[in-house]
Image 1: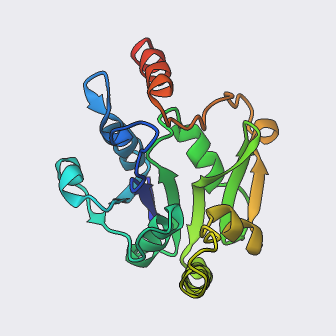
Image 2 (image 1 turned 180 degrees about the horizontal axis):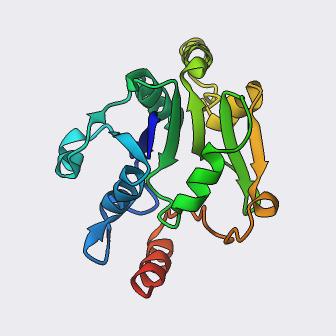
Image 3 (image 1 turned 90 degrees about the vertical axis):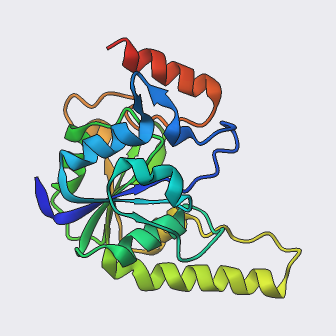
Length: 210
């Protein structure tokens, strides 16, 4: 178990394509948020959930924190998690990747690098919502968010740059692991992101059938 790394679960999405809070959907007798929390508690002595709906997640019985910056996307969840963490190194995971495994998380954590962000490239995408983030990136996040808010205030008709997490990854000297080639026995689809009812049904049938 890692005692010098905090596990941070992002559960702040609006689930617009799902129509309901996807992390509260059930697979078997467990909600998805309970499933992810159980996985994280097997690895980390400190685990927290970042959500803007504290009441809905109180049943999970681990610390909860809200976004400090509102309505700027997942980057706000990462920011709040890092600000509230007591450890320098942190493992961030989105609540909507229920196929994630302990082996993949351990591989990312133990990858030999000193970089402030460590994420993977898998299934054709950089998986920026599942990886390690140092508290040292907080000033860059705050700078990006402040700049985007300032642009929106000065130009209300201009689309906000979005405070994208991938922008942060690209700005900093990040480690992007080609996990499909570097991790023996990597299972394609481990980072499958569940966003709509058909994807939920696919995940439910897959996991309940195991």
